[in-house]
Image (cartoon, rainbow, N blue to C red; front, side):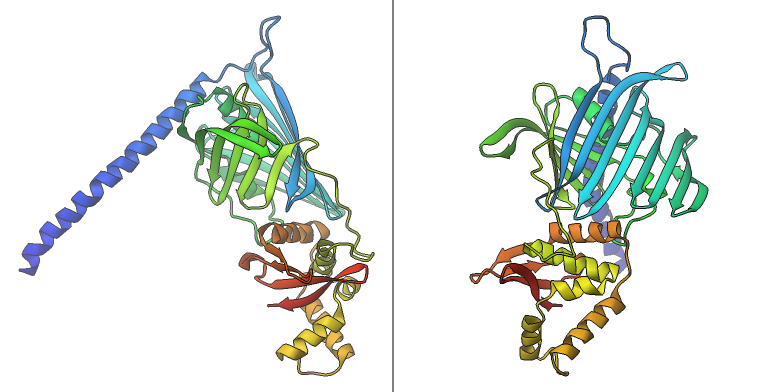
Length: 406
């Protein structure tokens, strides 16, 4: 009896799953077909006839992290030739300037008419560190010549990155694609060259390079901005692995209006001049805001600087709290302070400034902030960035970290 029943059940399971498998395959085929159709309609990257507008464009914007100006973005697209063939020449620059850390990533790309990446260069400069990549299509992937310069030491190597035919890269390529795509709702898939695989990771929280295509969903009419500066937009959702964004374009000419990041959260790209004024943080001076106190403590911990840890914490308040909760059962205030500072320094990974700032920026961007009735600011951090609860309070004219719950 059991054998007689088993065969029909297996058949029923197959029949139940087969339609969904077929539907998924048909959906993927439709996406592939729609993507190829748009790429096939992208105009040839050639100079226009006299009197007609050119195909190139430029866009500049501000990068906003955790609600503060964190840098600047520039995207330039032009037309040219490579080996006597017309190509798109794309340049993208990202300048970081936040909490005392500065850096610059510049990318230059040659794209075929359909946006397939042919070759390019990318350079990332952060402090005294410099990484330079030169890459070109070679068969089923890209050959990457990598030069890493740290202080006076130079490390050169050659790597190979697998990439499917037609793979592209960069925000400029995406904007070119969206300038050709219809405004009607549709989903597309763009294979992306995983160049991040050749870049050294900045910190342990970086997401592994994604090898699947990016899904580009044209949603339709949207709204961008906040009152009173709200504009009609064409809303596009972009997903690549764990990274997701909402991209807003002008419905008239597909000019970029702005980008809102859902993952990682707390990040935005806005038009130039809309990112607000630069906030200056100085760890050697009294903290004039709770964020300044957090950054002073964070820099002290991550970079192993005792004076910043000592200056960021209101030790009397922290001592009182830990004694009351039973966390501290040792000696007096001086012993308490020394024990905590020694513990922070022992746990520190002695990071460089740029790496520390990257972690602190994402800690702020992914954390939950609230203000209690007495003015205490509470920052609850995401588990990926410690999962701690920090409380900050203004004492006199200076802000301090007053408690840490781990």
